[in-house]
Image (cartoon, protein in one colour):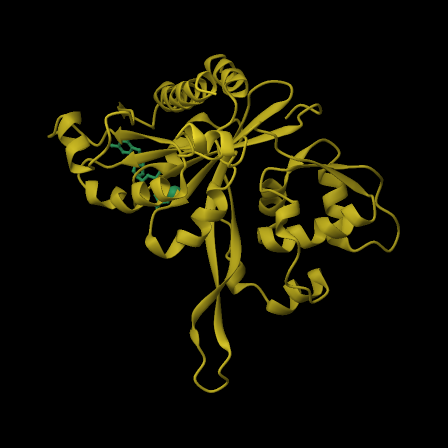
Length: 132
Length: 189
Ligand SMILES: Nc1nc2c(ncn2[C@@H]2O[C@H](COP(=O)(O)OP(=O)(O)OP(=O)(O)O)[C@@H](O)[C@H]2O)c(=O)[nH]1
Ligand SMILES: [Mg+2]
């Protein structure tokens, strides 16, 4: 692992990258949301935005972008929010078919695993793993 | 990854220091393991004496991950999560939305996995336990089950995560377990 820690990163650089913002709507972008560029970089665009658009010619997960850009996930989320707002990228959000905390599950005493996906999805995952 | 990929899924591998999390990610991932970090602000650490404002601390935690393309649409990400208690806040972030978890156990340091199991049960994340191969086992799997006070319905298996086939089988055992849970739930509805 050759990656340096952002702890040793110049804080000014992180500040500049995000325009001084430290928070974003984290719930909008999961670690494994897949990002796809919808347009080409344009002149004068912030260099991190340019890099993201280049990296996302085909789908790339938020957490992968963070690794490639060597920026913390929270910083990448802010950059992606800008691009989403500008319509430059789209995000494909994870779908597991989980029925979060349905009252039905509570009634049947199976509220133990509130995020458990539907069996159909798990079957597809199994097939994929067995074919590896 | 296929250009048609549109559904990112997560499985978390947890366990104590040096138990083989990164090795397992490496042995099944289609890319070399990548690593990155998440910074999080924790509120409620205490109240600052001088300002009376609730103190916050920002913690940075590194984790590694790999990727498996399951088919044209589904991409599975495997996260190696550090097991120490001070990382609990990262766990909660990583666990949210995960299919399930693998708890890797080093048979020489069983107690290292207690906290992980506690956390998973508390979070309601389904999991299996896999004993990694660090030489001829001294204990039977039943003895390990007792030491972990693991309920009968949680699968406990042996593995050697240096081998791709073995790591693959661990993932299959987890998803088999998840499928059984989900199927049982659907039948009861
Ligand atoms: N004997 C044996 N050694 C293993 C096995 N799996 C991993 N190791 C070795 O154990 C050491 C630690 O493995 P890692 O994969 O780095 O463990 P980790 O859980 O990622 O460690 P941290 O991230 O530091 O907590 C490495 O030297 C591995 O080669 C195994 O199944 N058997
Ligand atoms: Mg590791």
